[in-house]
Image (cartoon, rainbow, N blue to C red; front, top):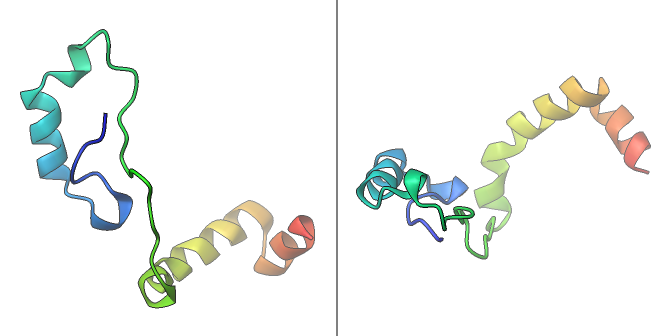
Length: 74
């Protein structure tokens, strides 16, 4: 099920909660999964670059440095 407002780039937590609760989705036995980003598009560089610092921090946390990640990923 697609849920409006759940796209990671334009997340609207109040709307998502309202929709899930209004439809009582947590208690629907036929509900398999929520689709939070139907055919997601991360946009161009200017839209994505706001995530650069978080991405860099994650790389350093996981690999010790950006250079180590690049080496491991070849």
